[in-house]
Length: 228
Image 1 (cartoon, rainbow, N blue to C red):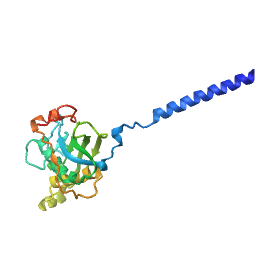
Image 2 (cartoon, helix red, strand yellow; image 1 turned 135 degrees about the vertical axis):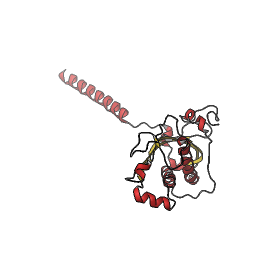
Image 3 (cartoon, one colour; image 1 turned 180 degrees about the vertical axis):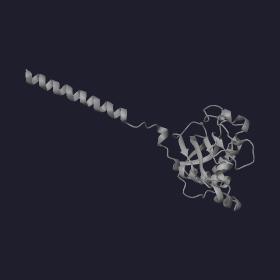
Image 4 (cartoon, one colour; image 1 turned 120 degrees about the horizontal axis):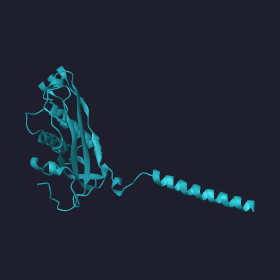
């Protein structure tokens, strides 16, 4: 009788142990959404849009490290949100033509930080260009995501002091460096190794007065909603 009870207890223990193993395994298993299986090199960028939300705070303070989301002095005083948008669009115009995958996508960029140098920092100690953005990959027909968003930190070292002055005298301005750097970062994220595609990729126009309303990726429904 004791033998039977012992066998039963062992059997129950194994069953409980098995359930626990399965439960732990299922809890620790990585989430694999179908969209996440799509990798960037398999994509072909057919268009793009750049969103610089109005919620990003602009600072014009001439301090070593101004407090703000957007610090940009590489162009005359104006709408900094629009200026940043144009820089990204130029970079995308250089980077995306070489995407030659089979899956067509709209590349949606949301800028979250664009912190270049103030005059005070640029002509003395230098610093870093802190540029953060999110890449969203959308189906051109449904405008739904086809892959997980990618948060990109494109921060790089900025010129300062005499080096900054010498660079500007040779036409290597902050805008030139940042535009080229962003183009390289975007190509790297898309898995592009050479810029050989013949046709340029056209941006989706986003008017400055509706940028704040484009603060989220395009959703299913009217494909022109919020774009024009």
